[in-house]
Image (cartoon, rainbow, N blue to C red; front, side, top):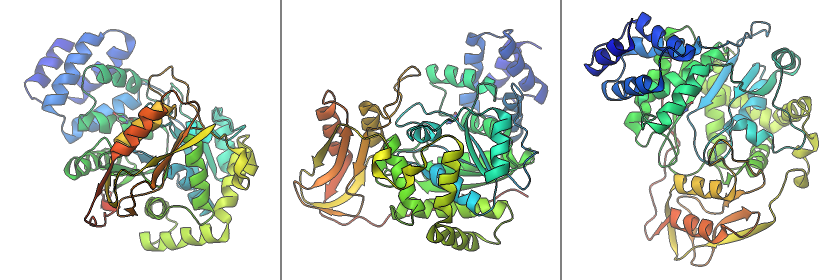
Length: 437
Ligand code: URA
């Protein structure tokens, strides 16, 4: 087999065989294929696409480039959840303890984030003492004991994805549906869960800017999961404005705790209930999404979800007082209001601009070497559909130092669109893709 022939075949729009896909991933990992040929193939895939079988083959070849987590020692159906990413998305912080409180074991491996804010692990690490570096035996033991654990994903899981993603990042081939789908699903499958709930986000703060592409990505990932024996369902959710009010690591942890206390923003609650209920359904713990939501609401009301959060945080060394005392989480030195330039209705909030502003403050990594500042971020005071008077606060910026403050305030103000007419209420749950049986 020669890489030249594989590139030529894909360039001509022909389907690659399973053996050819396995070959180019394993030879790339062993050094037999260089970056320049892999880049050419990625570009050919970008333009010619992959069919469903090829996409599933690529997913499994990437998955088989490393180790797979073995969760068989944990009794019950293990359900994982993955979001394609958005601004203010702290659903995993709520869902891990909430779904575990319902009796579904949650063994979650999570990456660190490059981009607007950190990933789930970075957010959790804003809690003093919290440790995400768990050895496999410790991780499994914790899930067996208390039903929930979150560990930082190691480089041994789907290592080919890391190298391919780095190449895609510099060759303008990230935004290809089969490449995104195989990248995400290879890591989910390697992480070992029996069933997967995917939250595919669409809108100004998401990878997928329009609903049609989001549905296509969702269908592609559901197809991969079901082909390789993992029950997989996707929910398509709105990311045209940030989720909840808080964007920034410790600020998001606080907002997630508010939800677990039965308070918190209604949009965040609605998405957590939809995803959580779908997880319960796949785990056989609910007969319907409606029934699952009712169960989850009871767990929030009774305080059992909050208690599970405290138990899980403490098990990983975090300060359990975080759920009760405001001053446990790190706080920024200063807060500055961004005021409205005119009166009217909030018609839109550009989520990507808010996300980039949070990153400029230090909430996210600009590059792999950047250090996250857990205390900084933005707390929206107004969301789409709210009224505002000129001079009233649109958002509060939490910053350490004034170096980028004016720039950030300007960006945040510019992200808001204010107009005279009340906008149509936006739907949060835009659809779902059921598992393929
Ligand atoms: N997230 C991933 O893990 N991979 C992609 O290709 C895009 C988003």
